[in-house]
Image (cartoon, rainbow, N blue to C red):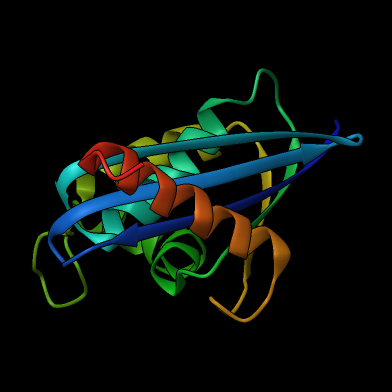
Length: 147
């Protein structure tokens, strides 16, 4: 099983507001950049969509290291998801899980891979994170007709 390094980031101008996401997949000296945008969304949805689209782009089962600056994504996948599912998609305080549609999609996509989830501090000079942030913001600019 090959190893893929995946960097992801989401951005939002206003929360909610227009948002974008970016992802970079790296394996065997090759890189692939992905990005997209939505007109009315939240930052958390963009963070989730970055990982969802990266995993959806994989053609076979892989070992992956996912690097995200979103503790929401990392903790959701490593600590919260099992409890949400056990409680019928309710949080510990019995409220419906926000972004359940995306969490279910991410859970399904992640299930086919061996994934390590890593947190990186955003806007701290990490090259992969900075490139994903630029991709996300360029996608917002394109959506808004600013470029």
